[in-house]
Each structure stands twice: as structure tokens, then as C-alpha cells.
Length: 203
Image (cartoon, rainbow, N blue to C red; front, side, top):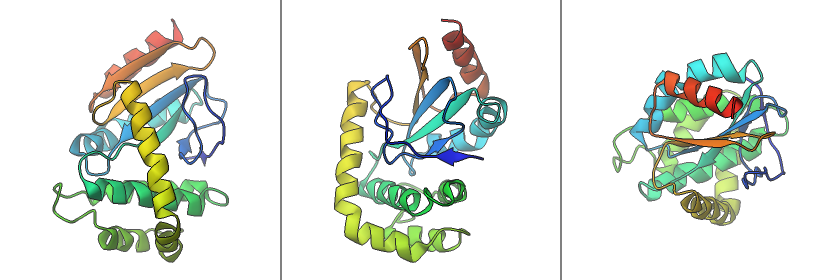
């Protein structure tokens, strides 16, 4: 699945800097996706709805998905969010698609909130098992850039509050031409996304 980065801000007001983006850069619809690696509803979305969404709308060039960290469940959520950013920094220039196996592996490894599964050491263990991601470079990024990255994530969380986002997963669909927008909250089934996409396209 193609991934890319961007340093632009969208007309919806999302600064794309630092965010993994799945899909073609010129897709007419943006899907902004706020998630927490500890959120069980995010995991359900990733397993049950996202594959169909990718197959029917991302691969066809209709939608691109912007992944935005929204760590709110515990301090371990922020640890996972910072590591997410470090993984993306490590792969985005040469092999951006390497981000996807890592992202999926972390959700597959999800345990109970507060169980320690999202500790830095455990997440680095997961990272070592993902081909094409340099765990040592990720660890260095977290030590050297962690505070700076955490600050940018907190800015994203503050912006999310302005969109009345208080949990995860939350999605906003945005038509870059008409500037029509729609919001979905929670692990909605695929047909809800299909309906929302059609409504935004015909707005």
C-alpha cells in the first residue's frame, strides 16, 4: 500500500507534517483518523473495517487516510504515539510503506490498558520483529527527539478538542474540492463509511 508524507496544511486546517498518509497524494477525499494504540475500538476498526475501506477507496485513488495520534488513555499511549512518529521518521524518506507492517503489528499485540504491553521496552521488542524498521534508530529517536515529538502530539490533541474530539477512533471525511466534511465516531461498520463517502462526494 503506498504511503507518503507532506509538509502542507490542508484546507480543513490539518497540518500534515509528521503524519503518515496512506494513498495517492491527489486523492479527492481526505480521511483524518485519530487513534490510540491502546484503544480496543481502534483495533476493531483496523481489523473489521479498514481492509475493505483500503481495498475499495484507497487503492482506487478516491481516499487518502491521514493517521493522527490521539493518545488519551494513559501515559503508555503517549509512549506508543511517540514511537509511531519515530518509526515514521525512520522509514518515510526511503521506504514509507514499511510503516504499515509496524502499525499493524502494534495493534495486533494490543493488550489490556495498563497491563504494560505498551511499555517502551515491549514496543521496541515488537519493532525488532518488523522487517525494514530499524529498532535501534527508533530508540535513538525516542531518546533524542522524544520531548519535541511529544510536544507536537500534544498540539494535535489540542487541535482535536477544537473539532469536538474526545476519544478514539474518530474520523473526519473532507472533500478537498467542495470542502464538504462529515464526521464518524467509533468503530463503525464499513457501510457507514460507504454512506458517508457518497454523501460527501454528492454534497
